[in-house]
Amino acid sequence: MVNKDDYIFNHRVGGWGGDDFGDSLWRGKPVTEVEVWYGRAWDADYTVLKGLNVHWGNEQSGLRGSAPPDALHTSYSFAPGERVHWMDLYGAPPDSGGRVDALRFEANNPFAAGGPGGRQTHENPGNHVFHGFVGKGHADIDSLGAVFHKEAGFRFPDAILLVFRRYGALQGVDDLNSGNLSVLG
Image 1 (spheres, one colour):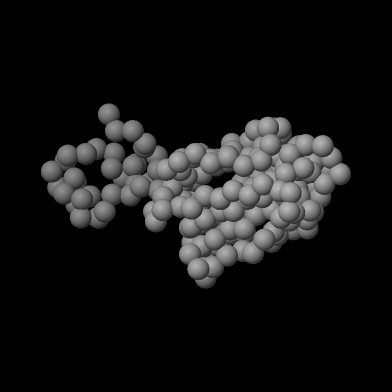
Image 2: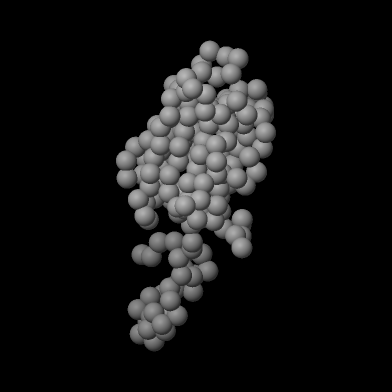
């Protein structure tokens, strides 16, 4: 069973509208492909994200949002073990009726989908292993936040600790393991 405490659920970018996607756009395994449709916003004259389909190997979310015939479609396929270096979402303020304008990230290659508008929000990539999204939408993607695995804290293995303590090679190792010391000098 997946422990949600092991993941970072970034704050949603975009407005308050749409139907909640629940857990349908993220899983406890890394994303292998993300498909994005983008085009003219419903009832507005700007470009927004229209639909998403997220893949985890042989499993996929199915289309969330919409994929109208006039929408542009793009996708990014992740190599095994590939990590996302950074991810930005662009969209309306959360207290508005606006939408998500664009998704941009860089893994082994850069990726961009959507329009030029919206307020830029940097997503917290945790340990850079991408697991999907949370959000809301209907005809457009109204809000979206990325889901990444949290960073695991560093801990010296017990055998190394024994050697360090035996020979006095490292002072403060207990502080390092407890998280109180981040740089050794």
